[in-house]
Image (cartoon, rainbow, N blue to C red; front, top):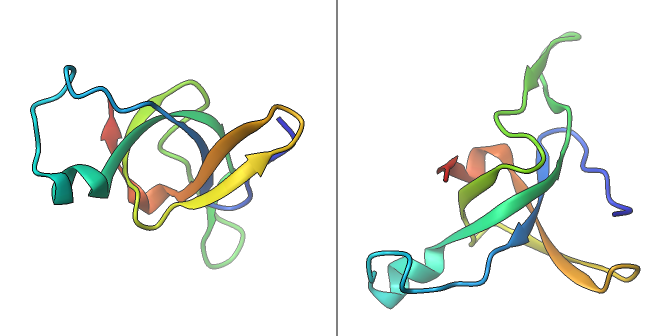
Length: 94
């Protein structure tokens, strides 16, 4: 991977949606949330001064996140799509 996220950004490989794994949700709600694997995470959000708030996730974690604020990125070397999200968009670890 040629992408190294900065600050509080996380690179996520979206998981394919399989309705058999989850309780069936109304379409509007199901489109709002997404699951994926963390590929890389930045060091954390820089606070006032020299303090850095550490990231709540690490590479290899599977997370549930809000998809409406995700930014798509295409890796031309690996021919894969990734999503860039902020740590505030992560709702939990799966």
